[in-house]
Image (cartoon, rainbow, N blue to C red; front, side, top):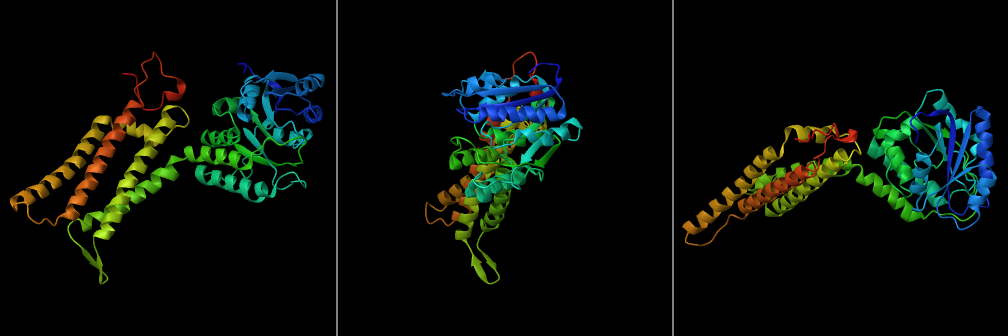
Length: 397
């Protein structure tokens, strides 16, 4: 991308063997840009076509770029890197979107009312354009999941391929994926960058040519991307809840059975609580490490992780780890001392011993996680931190 954006509209069309429809799509895009009276820049990104797609594109006056790395995201990123104008529209080359109506998406950008405008196909799907599985299950479920995990009620068709965005806004996203999950990545990063996102209803038509989609594989890639980028809701919160519940069950039972409403609560419940506590501390540390990776790599700015790096240092974490491990060791040696003092006779301290083991596992997990947490921030011996790392709370000292 150039440094000085020009007023106009760039349209990006990823293409893989679309010679039957590509010419019509280019002319529709040209007609849509003409409605706005702005300069046009129509880019066809050839992603390994074996037909005459490139020749058709050139014959209709489009710029043709070649992207050797296969993938929807790879093709679109190539196009975004080479646009000429400050308004960018992305679509498909199979006639499923009516690009003559791209002004519907572009107008909010031109008015300064939005940074990112997404098409919403769900209100006008022509017969045969979208399989029932996608229309009633896949797309609604994935869109709802995205809204839930990333706290946004704006997006109701998260995988619509017709979108408009300003060049400045796209540069803030730093998208890196190469496959179909690029569609989800754009939305997730736009939400996290606090872009002004809006939707506009569009018509979705039956595609021309062979579909490149793989329902379950592509759906899983979208879902996997969202899961991996939402560790707080999926890991930290359940982990903390499980850890507290497990400790609340195990700690009282470590000193003997309890009678609750006339019912005996004993070792069986303690075993369940202890295992829940141990599993939960592992989930918590994995969630924190995932958040740390996202923060340090510039995927998202995380105030919690930044606070940890500034105030809860490796040394402080080690002190906590040593205290928890020490508690477990003291209890264990006390039980062993009792056993020795009794002449290695009968020993009935399984509750307290199990609680000591819980402490040992928690302490080791905290220490190991803090070690890795600190190592992740070490490779920063450079003259100047990159801009995305300057606010991570880690300095090159």
